[in-house]
Length: 405
Image (cartoon, rainbow, N blue to C red):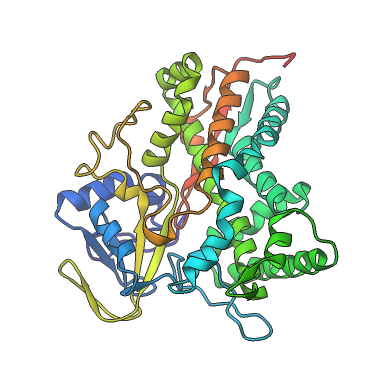
């Protein structure tokens, strides 16, 4: 349970860790929009603004001179430096002019054709996971399934041990969930991740392979080797951003299908519709909220923003804006016009979007093929994580026992 002070005024004192907001933020964003509040404000932790509409979110992402990506966490966190004093940075925490060449360096590994290399591996992984509980008649689809897929695929891309998947997810939870409200927990897991990748980089220097770490060590940036601080930042990003976000997206989609039998049955009958449904699940249950920091005194609507103030970017709020989406609160699995921003907007749009889509499509396809009928065991037993990344963490589901698959 949250220990935060209760919220009496969401316009001027919002709290993203409020229990009700974590469990179901959509009515709160809707109420803010209905009040004509495109930018909510809070003084909790530091002065922070929260856009509530599609246009407001897009405005902040487009004003890269006014709002820096130097710090993208929803609460203030320290900056990390290597032993030589270089900031350990990734493409999501890098502004122009450094951002474009560094992003271009990463994109070949996440292009559609490159991602397809991992589809068969993902399919077999999903089938193996399902076989592990298919004869039980129940499972925690968040813990036993959704949580298990992204770390193993990321491990394959980075060339690291997939059997460490439970440790990887524990580290990421420590950073992106517990650590956002507890400095000691955050630093503990941040140090583990930093030390882990120092070791992995040293190993690839001696034993290069065909993984992303080896590729970055052999690549060039601005005519020279890629700085180790940039390599450390980006391989750490792949682990952190590639696990929690996709885990949450897969879990949210399965939560929806477990609680909406008509949609589940339709996808069983029309599996060709799954890619379109995935886009709707991404729109309706977007997991990620990012942040920017004001580089100067400026304005957002009628709000005065001071240099150093934080602006969080709730992409889920933008994706429920009725000015952009028809019937935004309805989950329409065959929605045809769906220009959502689940993967962000502007120059920092998620580089791993093709990988996330592939993992979601495969996870849903394999589940429906092997367990076509399932429902929530107890809707009240479902728990959600919130803050930086929102998604189900416990998702108990029951289904008819099947064997021989």
